[in-house]
Image 1 (cartoon, rainbow, N blue to C red):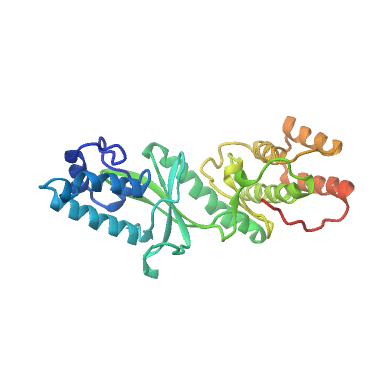
Image 2 (image 1 turned 60 degrees about the horizontal axis):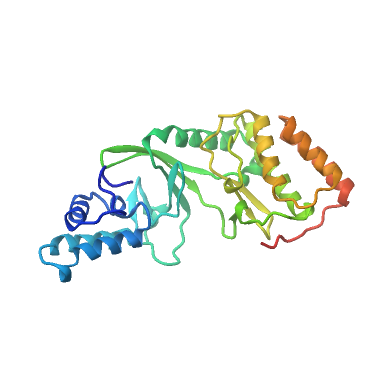
Length: 305
């Protein structure tokens, strides 16, 4: 999904370089799929515009065609994709919908899945691990709790520019979900409690299915502040750690959110961090006992970001 080696459209400075990129591109994604697509287009257009110098009319025309095609959405593995949603350390994420559904992308268009493509072929194994973990959970996990993890739609190898990269198509989170990084630390423990409980459910679901997450950090946790939903995403490190490491990591996520810890809760957190247990379901029962003793019956509290 990236341009040919030595041809980085985000840093091109000469007309000759711009022309080589545009004329040699096999797809619009090769030109606009890294960095800011709009910035890349403007940079190339400035260098190739016929008003600024003759001789580049053909290249400029192809640039415009590529830009129009990019905004309509590219076909990758039978899926029509839009401009990048996120550039992660491991993968590029694109909105995707099945080409059979038809339609094009524009402002406000919706999509039903996310295409993840390895940024570096050396990381193909990480996306392969994610696909295997999501398959395992879908097959062996408790159906009641499957909404806590993304659904693997399909996976395949995508070849472009002479390079083969692993690609996963996964279900998108419903509207209204935000990453845990959006939550300001200092929460009342009662507001953090439902996040804590659902993280334990997500981890327990995976553990009973026979896998682990391996990287439970705030940016991989999506929550719905009003509906109290949670989705644990990015399973690229699945199977790389044991169950106790998942418990330690998710406890650290929650501990960083809470403001004033009641003494019994502080002791509970300290124990989970120092000697994390491996049974998420047993720990959830212990947590419920603690919350009941501290606050009584559970009461719905909307989380205001």
